[in-house]
Image 1 (cartoon, rainbow, N blue to C red):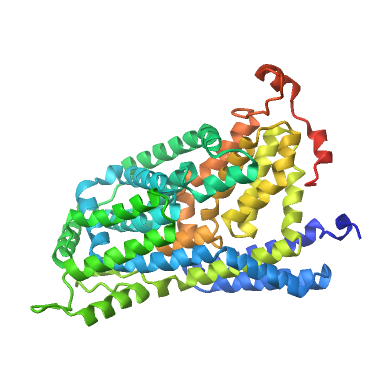
Image 2: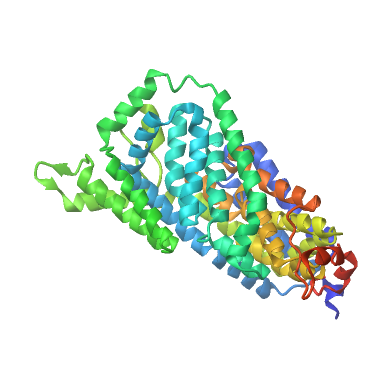
Length: 503
């Protein structure tokens, strides 16, 4: 039977998405910040089962084939799960070692509230640009900045927005980033051509971001910075931890390792081990007596903190609340959320419902500008349904590649649209692997930080607006034509879409 006759209708394909959104909206209304501590995981599982039921009963899909695809989808997220668990252990050991307390201590002494948000964004931008990983940036520097923001009286969501905005700018523009390498590979262009073309949309979006955080910082008034409690917290940190500036060499070492192209997992594990060693040797710990370090007790303590997290007992309630966190076990909710999200996305793809939704979006394109805007929209939809930024880039890129050629557009336009729509918006979806990770390591619910992720919100808008205006669109160079003649001869050709095999 012809494939077009058996493909699912659009209304049917949208049913699982509507069911998912209804369940998640209900969870947020009922459980609020606790929605991702169990209810959303269950909601994703129920939505996956609903999608599977439609696939089996209505679309007559083979159950085992759908199940295999769902499991393969989970496998795609295993690297993210391992990184998440390692970061959980790293946070615990870095608090115990004094790395995080030292960063907070020196930060609140050196950075004034008026420029804190701007500085936080820039710091995360530089670190992420150097190492090519928004996740590593959020899980290391970002954690300390969240702590600093609490002390200075800034809302957690606002600080997380500055951290995420900076981290994703650096990740997007770094030649070391996975997504920055994946997008041009899928689109059919080269890495540095892709990065150069992203400048047209990324720099305006980043400029808006920096100005926004600078203005918010100037007009944000908090009495917390001048409160004697801040000085008391700083003194508590100094009394209970060795907060030497030399401790900052540990996160710097991780940045250097990743900068030299060491994969994220071994680099983070090395950072974890350095933190554990520093805790044993330099910090004031209960196992250290007059006779030196008790090896057995030290090992037990480090292992316990890496797995269960650090429990601060300084006697200062604010400090204890700030530093009692980390550990692998505290990432369990996020891991389950990622697994359930990948099951839903895998079933949606296996039953043909996800490709059908994406195909419907493709029909909205009627010119070069609308094609780019449609690509961005498709990436966002895949982020919402497949729950993984890599799938957003790969599925959308595979769909649109031949259509861009039919419109006479250079592949660099596609690769840029994939990043502007796929990479930066993934962290805004609570059940996406990126949104779950950011929420898990920063300790801030996705919907709490979402309104403040200026760069992530502005980037697709800037990109789509510029495309609609026909600005910074690179057309294919036809052999023997000048650039001007090429632009005249390759005006938008919507009719050529009819021959696109992707349709």
